[in-house]
Length: 262
Image (cartoon, rainbow, N blue to C red; front, top):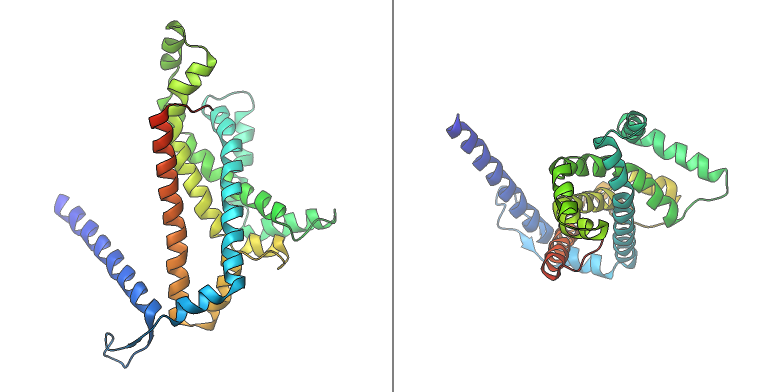
């Protein structure tokens, strides 16, 4: 059984490496004579085109801003909700049901419902609406990620801290945050990835007026330009990888300085 598991794992890793290498080569490959896949014409055309496309650059900046704000706001709202559900505070069943609604309702219905709601009030085509919609989409995932963190945050630890003379601020600083930090970091990263990859809600609530990474990149996928599509995919991966690295550095610096507050 262990040999089969290792074989599946190595096969999965190998396929990922092959797919990554092919994606990188395709982003530089303009055409190739079949079946000589390596004997192709390589150039920087796709990357040069994207760098000169102001609309694409603007879409990236808008998406980074929207995804960052959406992930932070979702985390701020998901923390008390996850605590309420885990500790079974009053009406926790109703809260859990409401949080799970985005999983039950299709994105199309959610997007159209939000569009009609805000359009009736004369509010459409703004980043604020997109951030609100993304938060509704991210919060269920954030709650599911944060909820197991409270399982490690047992009452015995808090009682021990209070018996040793720690006040509420010290408890949050020395016990609560260090235990929840990995889950908070994961929720932030997941929220960022979900937001920046969201297409339908961004398009509908933005009314085509707010350019984002996905709304700008989608026409290139339809055009079937494999070089530019591959380059866009690599840019997407790089943005997410950079955000993950930033989160890792920030949390490492916070833990080293021990000057955090929650």
